[in-house]
Image (cartoon, rainbow, N blue to C red; front, side, top):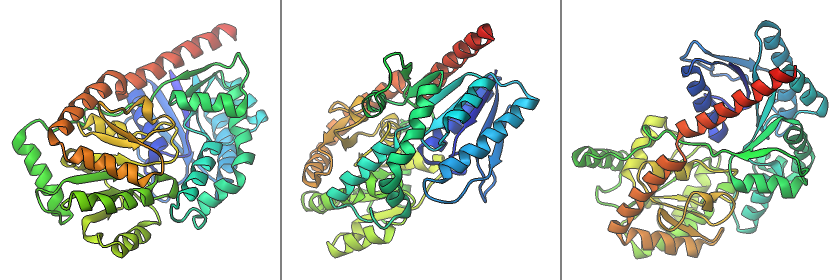
Length: 415
């Protein structure tokens, strides 16, 4: 088969969408399928390490939110160019970061069957920012991208509705996202939408079983960040943005170190909030207990997961959220918000849930977990087993491939 991915994110633009599209595309290429990825141009060149995987860069307007429309325009042009040279068996659109009009969607549908992945919604992003602002998260109104979402999400949401309605099939990355589209956009009764969770690489993100190796990795990571070897280490991963809930996390950590004085916090994520978060920690007397790392490659990140005791995911909105699954796959318990798609992955057998925005509830959860290392180990084992059974990358890719083949066969029969 020849599958075309249309995704505004692709390495070296990672993010949740970039990661999932990269892993899915690579898996398909390794299975012998031809994969063409249409994505935004980047100063750093996109690279492909497989002869079946081809990356096409297109122009885009570097304006918050509007880039989704310009990217759509140039993507459709490139799609027609690819189709003129190679038959396309399926077009996989990754919403909401490509804003196609009805006319553009009809053009896509005339080339090949279309599948629209629902990674979340603009209205959900907006509501997440509103919630973050209500709970005092920093920089909601000072970040141009966040401000643009607040002001224009309603306008741009009409494009994701068009694509979701006109695609041959929509695929939500969680039941919460599927329900969100039904309720927000009043999708018709015959709307075909399935749920396929994005999976994680259970070989890359895996527990280090050998006790000596595990101890060496633990010591290496603590040495890198200047933490004592025996300190309980709490990890948070994700973009430094208002809706990710880092202010809530720091407010909770102020209480945590009173009950667990040696506890340390490591945050991995890019963004403009780094100085602000450090200032908050300094003002409240625990700057020496936190470190913020801008980014790590996958191998380094897998070591960090393996070396920590607990992962916290305080986000105000997610379509799915891969961080909890990466932690669970690494054998590390997770504390996460009790809303949206998170309870579909996390419960008190693999970690715990806290009330969104409630820093005191989050602090209680962290303290309770850190004070019982034996229970932490058991939750880590259960979490790893759950990911292998229900959220593996291979399982996710095979489900998409099954859909591709079904759609392509039906399209050919009708042609």
